[in-house]
Every structure is written in structure tokens, then in C-alpha cells.
Image 1 (cartoon, rainbow, N blue to C red):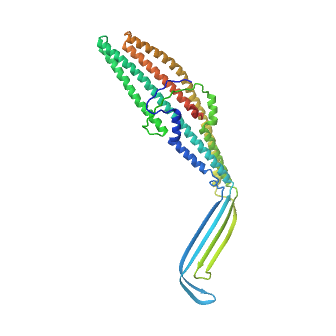
Image 2: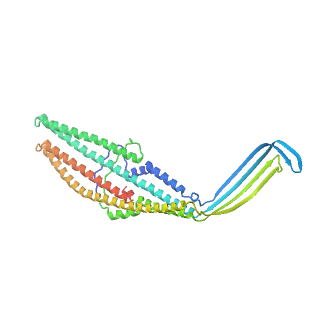
Length: 425
């Protein structure tokens, strides 16, 4: 494990583990993904697939007022009744069940869609965790840059005081003193600009955490890198753990089950039904004054589609093509995943080699800057030579910091692609 020194900046301490925990709780993309997962789980139910019977209950009552004229066969006189009232009351309980093999495939498809939604939520979570981790270390990087710039400013201030004292004693020209003042102001400007960079990095991290943009954070951490990642292990892990690849496998299953659903539509269907009802009719006029019926009715219906204009055949053919497309998409995704891992791993290995160069160059530049400072204090080295050594040391330090961050970013990306980004936290 390799690392760089840590630096605190701001007010509230926040470790990487705490940042990830906050993101998992508050990040909007993760919350939406979890809600969508819950919706898919709610649909994974036998009733949604048509495997459960239906039961309906109904009741009603109606009234009517009519003028009635009636003449009966055995009574030639016409009977007239004005405003004769009548009413009807009915109540029923009806149940039915459709026996269809396609419902079994529908239920399996809903289960696979539930698994797919879970994997899609996992993709969102892992991508967000990787983004939070990268943004967190970006703040660490910018704070380390700030620390280096602050040290440079302190040296520039020391040089300015030395130049001022020498100028006042007549041992140095005003030009040398003014040059030291210009360099000090330049370093101060870079430090102020770096404060803005840190503020923006914090805002971006807060956005991923679902926090207010201006909420203060202190990131006090060390960037630790792993230099022992193995390409074959990463490729093997991706085949079994990458959630995007696993989701593509579920898409193949969904397409297969959709085709089986359609094929099942060619088979006979059996519909069972039964009902219990009660009807009562009352009338002040007519031959029947009260009519009441109570009882059961039940039965079954068998049906099979013989021809529907080749609609079902075309849908089955398209479902078969869709299944083939899902397999092609899976193979394409697998190839792209292996390519991304290989390319990122190559960059990771190259960055490790560059780190060794940066580390060596940093040690040389720091030693040279220390010597230049001592020689400048003794009046042996000119201010321009000291400034050059100072700038070389700063550039070497910043390259070393950037090299460590680049390796860390590649490491996070490799673990994300391999489906093990949570282990990087």
C-alpha cells in the first residue's frame, strides 16, 4: 500500500465510509432506483399473472312509477291504475377462474423482472458509490495541492523578507526585491484560486451525497492505493459479479419467457365460473305482484384460437428475434466490459510505473530546493536560481499527488467494472 500525507480543510470531519453511508441514504438516484425496485417486487404476485380467481359482489335497487292500463283474457273490462309503483332488488356474488398455461410463464417473467429491477438498482448504487469515492478523493487531492501551494507561499514569503532585508541593507537591488514581491503575489493568487477549486469539489461531493451545496465538510484522509490488482482476477470477477452483465442475462430470460407466454396462447383455455344471486321484484299492477328468485348458476367454457390473421404467429416470431437480440447485446456488453477492464488496467499499470518516476523526481527536486534555499540564505545562489528550484519542487510534488490520485481513480473504476466497488470503501 502506498500513500500521501493527509490534510484537513473546513469544519466538519467526514470519513469515506461516512460519505458512502450518507450517499446510500440520501442520493436521489439511489432513492429512485430503490423505489422502482419496490414497484417491481410488488408486481411479482400470482394475481398479477392471472393465477388467482376473481370474486365480484354486486347489489342494486331500482324504483318506477307508471300509469298502467291492463286487460286480461277472462276480464274484458280494462283496468286502469294511475301512479302504480314497482321496485326491483338484486344482489349477487360471482367468482371465476381462467386456467391458462401462459399465466405460469407470466408469473416467472414477473419474478425475473423483479430480479432485473434489483440488479438495475445495484448498478445505480455501485455507480453512485464509485462516483462518491472518486469525488471524495478529488477533495483530498485538491486539499493536498492546497497544502503544497501553501508551503510554496511560505517559502516565497521567506524569500521576500530576505530580499527586503538585503535591499534595505544595500546588499541587494530593488529589482531583486520587486521580483520576490511579484513571485509572492503569484503564489498567493494560485493559493486563492485553489480555494475555489476545493469549494467546487466539495459542492460536487455534496450533490452526490444529497446534501445542500453549501454544507461545510472536512475531508481528512490519506489516498491509499493498491498496487497488486491482477487482470485475470478482475475479468473473472466481472463475469460473475458485474450487475450490468447480470442484468443483461435477466433480459435474455425475460425475452424467453415472453415468447413462451405467446406460444401458450395457442393452447386451449378453460374458464370456470359460478355465481349466487337473489332478485326480488314488486309491483302494484300486473299479473305478478311479487317475483323472487334465489339460487346458484355455474359452468365452464373451453376455448382455443384457430385463426387471428397471423397476428399471434408474427408476435412469436418477433419474440424469438428479440430473444436473439438480447443474447447479442449480452455478448456485446461482455466484450465491451472486458475491453474496458483491459484498457483501464493498462492505464493503471502505466500509472504505477509513472508513480515510481514521480516519487524519484520528487525526492531529487525537494533535496535540490532545500540546497537552493540554504545557498540563497548564504547569498551564494541568485533569487532566480532559487525560484527555479522552488518551482521545480512544486511541480514535482503536484505530479506525485496527481499520480497517486490517477492510480486511485483507475483502481475505483476497475473495481466498479468488476462488481466489487464496495470493497474499495
